[in-house]
Picture 1 (tube, rainbow, N blue to C red):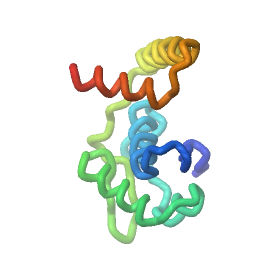
Picture 2: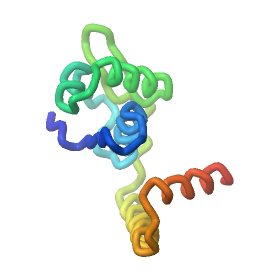
Picture 3: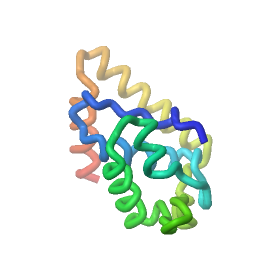
Picture 4: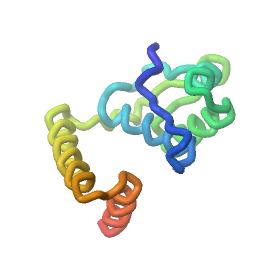
Length: 127
């Protein structure tokens, strides 16, 4: 399995485990990972991303607790059957388009990505 679908920015200020968790969650919601798909091994993903294997292990355990992943000791880690939360393709594309518009507006106004993220998080909590 190609590993290039996960980007970790070690200088972003956001903890690596949060970035990894969010990226895997995103890939499941986008439908790039489906129920039953095998995830990379802990060690393999850690080496590919240049991060500690304990970080990957923690992320996998957290996502298992959320019901997104299924860990089978000695066999591997898989996307859980309960993780079939992919948005319909058209809906996802519409969502991406709106997010792009908001990001473009923020960047044009001189706002940074972390500032925009803070606004989105605050609005999310209001919902």
